[in-house]
Amino acid sequence: MNNSALIDKTVTFVRQTLQDAEGGHDWWHINRVWNNAKLIAQTEQADSLVVELGALLHDIADSKFHNGDEELGPKTAGDFLKDSNVDEETINHVQQIIRHISFKSGFDKAGFKSIELDIVQDADRLDALGAIGIARAFNYGGFKGREIYNPEIKPNLSMTKEEYKNSTAPSINHFYEKLLLLKDKMNTTTGKKLAEQRHNFMLSYLEQFYSEC
Image 1: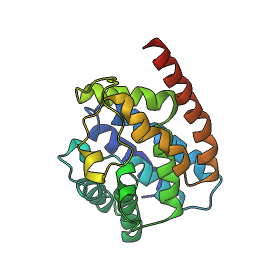
Image 2 (image 1 turned 180 degrees about the vertical axis):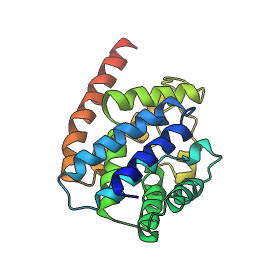
Image 3 (image 1 turned 90 degrees about the horizontal axis):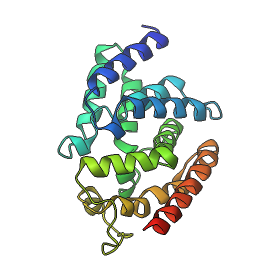
């Protein structure tokens, strides 16, 4: 199977698998991350196939929707790629991207690094910023039944990985506990440039939000 056919097959697999997914982690999220990754990869020296497969499969079984199982995603992706006769090195690389892409993985000591991971991670983080990032934050908060805002509950800026995973804080707190931190965690030059504008938009949004409150 050539690379183009493999990407097409992967798109079909992901769309089918995530057809009932929560709105912030559905196919359209994947599609945006995929497009972001391809854009960033144009300015980096990277394996384009690994970048595209990593972007397409990065949320194929997000642990927060699967009882915290952080190995289900890599396994699901690995099984699909193996059935598609992808070579073992590529499969392992994509699985490592899935394991290390998330914000919560940053609480652990870095165990894997590659330019392909940097690109896909930046692409995913961009979708957590700006207008789309705001929409996704409130969508997920509503999905989990969380408050929009409660001034009596202050953001926790020194939480552990377990506290982050188990947080039930209002959605506005998530801006301070994650979203506004992403700009300074971008890996690539293009990612940093794109993040800056989206970050500033979120600051403007919060200013408007508090003025209305």
